[in-house]
Length: 471
Image (tube, rainbow, N blue to C red; front, top):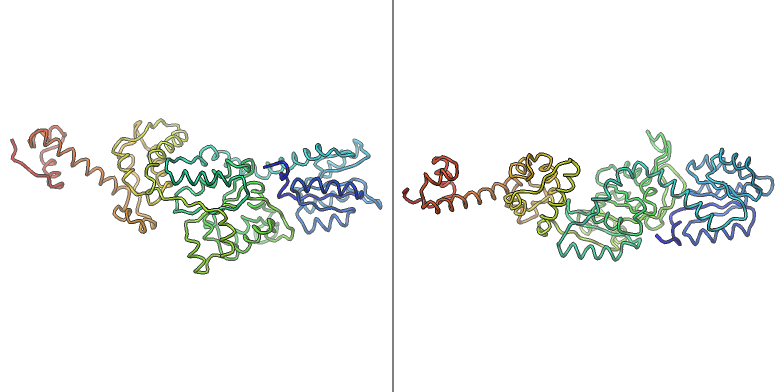
């Protein structure tokens, strides 16, 4: 993000009785992208703070009429405990500095102010506050960054999609990612974020289908203490955490019409109110939405707002299902082997050829997510350095609802069926070749295959092999 817009999404209050100083500071911070409010006395400042969420306050310690910036500091910190308060004075003393810090000031600045130093101080405190706010969230997020935005593909359609993502990633445009469940929509969203100029901000994911309407409101916008039963303290919402980062709204097609209306307002105004609150909070969060539903049909059915659709559909990315890009399966297998070898401290080198053939033949109704699950389980249970058919057959995957709509998937009800089909085809081929090599001698063929004559006869009948007279 450029230095000129680094303050976008933050609000700043300047309280000083010198008109020229207020005007100069207002221009300075507006150029940085801040939403700036100014006041010349305590009453004006408190009125502004009651109506608007303030991130940073620059407070003159001595105001006209005997008013004190120290008194104002106490009042503002009661309204907004996380406020970054920077005290300004032309009459510096150690006692005054210590007293302001005890009242909750973040720093102490002497006039005349140096603009460069002032900006450095403001941004340093904003960065520290953001780190504190997102600390628990980032602990998990940092673990995911290394693997979760890698796009493993040699498919031409996916490569074209990534080129399109590269063109728009540094712009704050909203984007819509569509595709079946498990195709990797979140991976594309993470790719856009972590390779963009917003990568130092948070990537925040909200699953709109996993939460009730009440909980989703609180999750997105946060809530104030006492906003509802059980709200024992203030909760910071995902829009605030994602300020200057990216908010990924997964399964947006499951969002209620009421929340859709609130979301549309936030996108248009870049501000919102916490549940139970009255202050306007600004957020410069880029929104990326994803869905496996047909939003155009949802609009016709009255389940999705058309105006919201066009707001989130500035750029669209459609991910093809795995069955349409099977050339990626070997690459994905290698990728997931590396991931889960590291996780479980194992050394599985790969899979046997018949396993690879089975995985290539399967139509993957659960897409990349299902393939990852299979490899995860196989690595965990594998007893050798190569995944065998038995390792894979431990997982039985029933046909998902999505596969009903896939013509090719309808002929294979589960991964077990696909594997059994591959095994049968290879078994039949091996028996035929061995019989041919032994000139149809069943006894010798049974010995070579390490099975009994009875078993050989049963398999020949099963596969309807042409029988010849035993030599």
